[in-house]
Length: 124
Image (tube, rainbow, N blue to C red; front, side, top):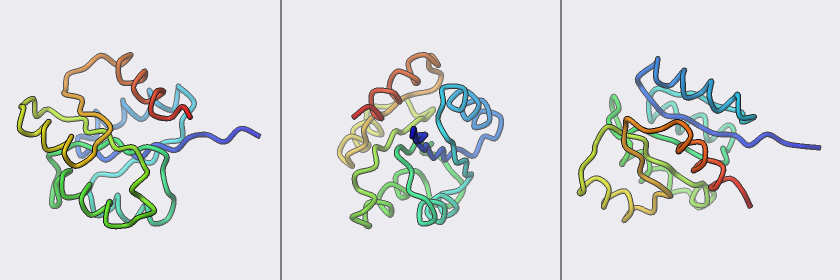
């Protein structure tokens, strides 16, 4: 039996999130969409994803703090985490790397690049 890999997308820009979700579903992934970090933490408690893709700039808790809160739970530390953001600056990228993020992708980006990164991170 083949189990679909689950990807949680934390993105407050609805159109962008919908496009990204559709693209990943077309690639055979199951996608959980959330708008806020708080909602993301609740969803992860219900169903642990295989990969998290999150924006940095969010309403309420930002992506960096979401990552920090997530990593407090040992069971969630193994989930690969990708920042997908409009912040194209060295300090934010360094912070993401120091936190242990698997990748830091700046918008705009090539969809094929994102798909290849997702595949790489989800391939055992």
